[in-house]
Image (cartoon, rainbow, N blue to C red; front, side, top):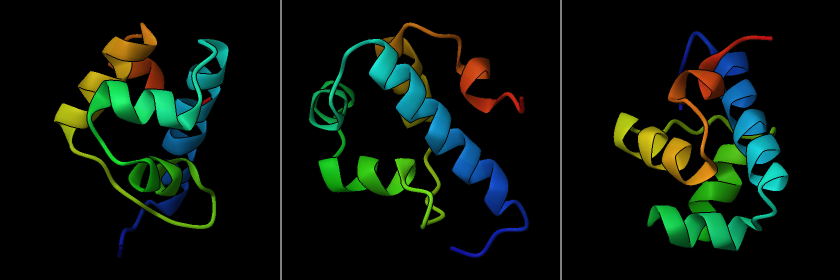
Length: 76
């Protein structure tokens, strides 16, 4: 994926992984609850790839993880 903001995609993936682990979910659990494949989630969370997600998927993840969508997008 070509993007001018690869570090933001990586940060998003790391935040998803952080909140997923905080909730005690495995990648498989979260993928199932959100309705995406395990492979896709692994790519999103992985730091070696830049993988975008739709807003729909972002909102679903935020709901399942019980965080505001903005928490997943914040730069710390």
